[in-house]
Length: 366
Image (cartoon, rainbow, N blue to C red):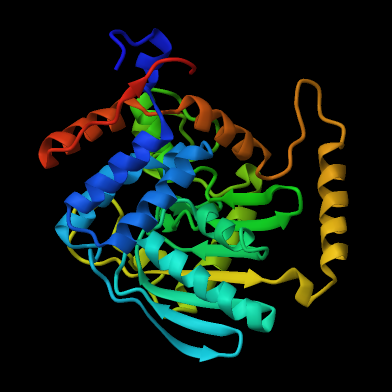
């Protein structure tokens, strides 16, 4: 570690190389007794978030994951079981595993089914928080298939014109392989922002954008400390975000036999021992089951190139879904990732508690 941290690095806590973050995450998860598949899946998902600039769903989740594994909410050594296989569909009981393990296993089975049937869909039950949904959609795209991922979560998002929590942030992700380039990658919450973004802004002492969060009375606020609920995506047209959240609820919770968001224990506790029973839905689609591979690839190229060539507004740039994330991934692979001050402090506490080497802070870049 360098003798001094510049002002910009102090503001974010520091930059850490991705390999160091991966090492530390795996060491901490193993120290709390998680089995090898859990360690690998959780670290892989967190590093996906951090690598691609989705810091709200990256390594800052590690302290929470260590806590819920230690307290008993998440099964450290689960036995996952696939059942109800029927042609292109299957059901996965995750045995209250870490959500990343459940989602990766579910998508693996979905791609196996799709390889034989053209499409594969897996409903996941008894899961838990899985982090960045795009990580699991990308697992399908890396095999040449379109991946779709949906998951519900505990209530923290008001309805359009509502003044109480109802839906979770209920993410939607889709990854599409694109010959010769990185996949087209959409990863979005159906809330205006994910709650972890609020926590990140609290740590950084930053104000939130307008119309993304509300206080306890449902009034919009930009003060991260005053946030009691999130707004659905869409601002004045938030009924669209609320409708999308409902769709996710149906596919991930109702279709898997799990509870809707307003019946799920909150992510932040205080009960960190009782499993939350989240549901999820993953799907893999083999493009050449519907159209020739060359036709599909030509269509994707024409679409994405046309999108990127679309005239931007003054001072702006038009990008395809995933363009920003892939560019940020390349940058962070070279210069490391920023770690906010609160997370850096928690890493140091984990290192001390379990006798681990703290992540080494690198200097250079912001």
